[in-house]
Image (cartoon, rainbow, N blue to C red; front, side):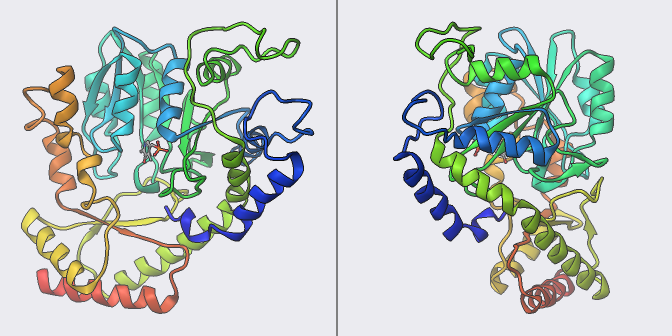
Length: 390
Ligand SMILES: *Cc1c(COP(=O)(O)O)cnc(C)c1O
């Protein structure tokens, strides 16, 4: 997720241009007489609609906010159940908690994404939404998830925070389910510092998302903000013009970022395979993945620990797995379960299948600016460690 690698002069210029154009109006709405026709958040949304081939986009203050807003648009509240995978960033669970719904967490499979059969097995008459998450840039099995969801009349909300720019079956991640969420935080594939977006092909869901992200505002075309009505409850999850201006620039860099990291990943995987790297790679369902991580599985927990010790010695870092598992695997979320009750007595023994997979997984970050020398060097080190621990 390396948007930060190509961040600087152009983004700074975009902020200067914003101040030059309208004196620095940073609020995305109103001030119509003063802002001289400059609406950067709107422009960012329009550019995202074009790039991701989707009819509606609502920029918001973060990816977490996007999830909260999307759940509100789907009408999720008390008494509903929302199903998420055990392996995701904690924000997916937090958004469900904030919505008032009950959290249901299901196992992943060797794709490191939601196991569709585990999703199916967890469905009850209260299930309202399923949230497949495209972890580490690779798509969840949207064919199976959508098919099961349709049969049971469950809405599909894609958490594509880590999947911006990826595709599944030729369709941009985030635009396959009923509604999708993107994140532009400082670690993602394109970044605005903080920022997120809700995308959907449904005008109705979009109107609800737009209202919820801004205190319920109906977005009237005839009266001013102060006089217009509310179409429902809401909160403030608005994006600022600074973030919008930066987002436009970063979105323009997305294709270059994807091309570079996919090429680097392909080179590294080829070199590993040529060198006889003995360990299995993560099952990737579609070549439209982002290419920002290589994940491989060791044979057991002990060997994984020895491999990680080797990587540390050689100065090679990992990407979330396993260094930030605390924030990405439900087994570690006792602070939520003890407070809200779900899994309070069982979280330590739940999701054992996920644990068996994740405890043997190592994710290697793929950067945009990896030289061929660096890729060769990393490969050599990984092969050396593999020989030591095999
Ligand atoms: C980053 C992330 C989020 C939250 O996005 P923020 O912009 O950091 O709030 C949600 N889900 C997943 C899977 C993420 O990786």
